[in-house]
Length: 366
Image (cartoon, rainbow, N blue to C red):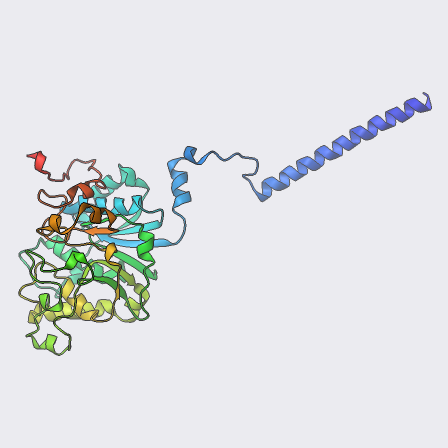
């Protein structure tokens, strides 16, 4: 073999060895990258192609926003509508706590699991009516379940433990804004809750027909009673509506708010401290006493109320209702009933009952 041929063979062998070394290094690099990032090399699909479950996980990250709402069988459609409006109008990581009697759980879970609310985060807490024994007097004008559950808001730290802040919503509510913005409402130092004052917006101007003048403390409390007199509260002080509460639960617990509320519940059952003109809010008077001049305020557009009273259709324009962040049908006329104003707005968020038990009553359904 000539020297030239030997050189060619050596060059070929060196080239082969070099290629082998390069291949091994590339394989090692690939293994290293896979260990560091198992998804490396995979092409993520376009967002529109992501499955609903993956989308949910991507959109609902961040701090949890605890929301408490109560549910009775005859008003379950209201709860579903309120929750759907919250969920559809925000990408926040909302977690609902639903306080309900035991006989409503099956219907509630069926409605949630068989509709688009199946991905909503929620937990069900069974209401124990024994909690209120000796604390309230009997009221024949109000269905027992609805009356008892209305006091659940007094026990926020019990139902939603180990959180700093929470929101309570009545069931006759529709949320049209991003609840993240509501949750970020600032509470003043030392305040355990924020409410909507009844003198703060067009929603409370004048006398609420059918309910009397309940824009001030005199509409809820009997200032002739000695126990009320001793508190030194001004009768013309603006009242507030507890259908929406933003609560600092750390302050709530530190100030023993629940125990204070229970004290005034018991006093009323013994001394009948509420105003004779009181319409239907048996939960408002003790809250007014405990939070007298010690609560923060909520942006008026985040609680446009009295949609369930006579004349609501004349009080508000459709444009104003659409612009509101939160709508509240407090009053006798509910949006799932025949005579309510702005039922069409509520209908946008209602999800038909897959079990067929709940049907909104509409004029054309005679």
